[in-house]
Image 1 (cartoon, rainbow, N blue to C red):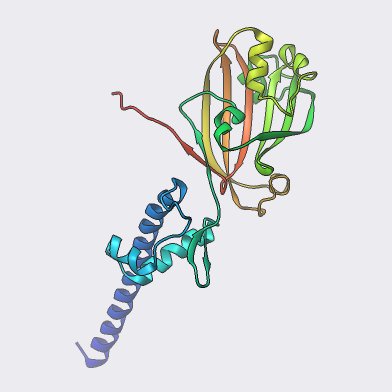
Image 2: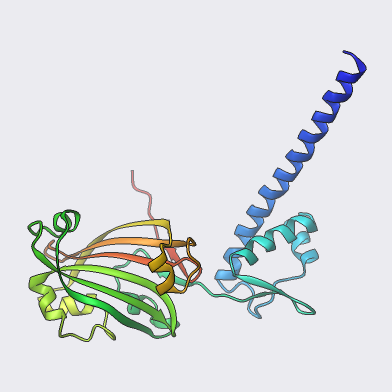
Length: 259
């Protein structure tokens, strides 16, 4: 192999090795960020201050550069911040939302503060085909539509779009929607408990309207929970599309393996 080609090949090899090392460090930083995030969200740093970068590196047997890169990822998520003379501190809290029990938001987060509802819209609308199918009502028949901005301790947390069959929804129009979960109201109106719900959870980009209402950056990721709730007798009574601010909520559940 001519000398020039050998040098060219060696140079390409050095570039490949350097790129691999950068990629490897990025992978390690992401893994470390996942572990630190879990501690941040579960109160693993009681005084709100993370250990020094050197200590984190020693604990996880990684380099200081990797630790800094991991902390940069958490900082970009708004979970931590670097304060001169103090170190890296926790600056945001995510609230736990369980997925293994059928509960309203106020019931779910009662230990973390007061949930308040701003009713932005409430009234009958013609049921679009997907809504009518899920609620088992004729297409085009009226259903109650409710749009609520829900806050926890005054901070915007979710934007809820709800569809309810009108025979039940009419009674809801006179109810205290600002201070009471729809779940509790439905049980009071029907005289029977809720039974089960089908849920779908995915990440979507915040549209202009949702971002404005939630006071979130336009295009930022929000958690979209679609939930169809049934009464104990099986009747579907509540179809919801709930957009949660992803920086303020974390979803969790208990799964059991069954083959």
